[in-house]
Image (tube, rainbow, N blue to C red; front, side, top):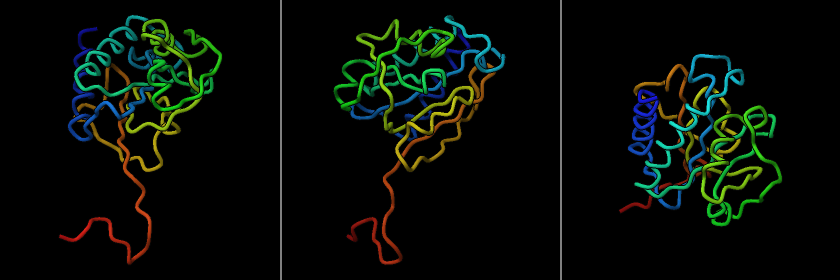
Length: 181
């Protein structure tokens, strides 16, 4: 578990260096604890892995102030576990379900039980994301996602993909994106 904590902290630090996370930013995490353990996604959920990831993310969150959402699996339509505070800040619509290991996933289930004032919401529009084990978080990111390649692209045995977002560039050949000095 210590290796999982170290690798998670390294990934969070790289994301934060590329895209500073602050109190107005929302980070979405999709996690297959099965994949972290080298098993097929959805086959071997682990509360121990979920606990290590959850505590590392929340410790990092306390240092930087961003808000976090934990994505459920497809059995709950990839809904998300957030704090009541996050739901209110981003005006998210709460849905009625409780994630469990076999319908939501071990990570979302752990987060729901341990996040202060947890609620389930149907969707978000996050500023950044970390996908651990190819859980498909893209539907919860702002429209223009920019990949970030981590130096070590895995946590445990799971492949890690990260993304930050940026505003859409609109206009044509005459558009200006930075005011001239």
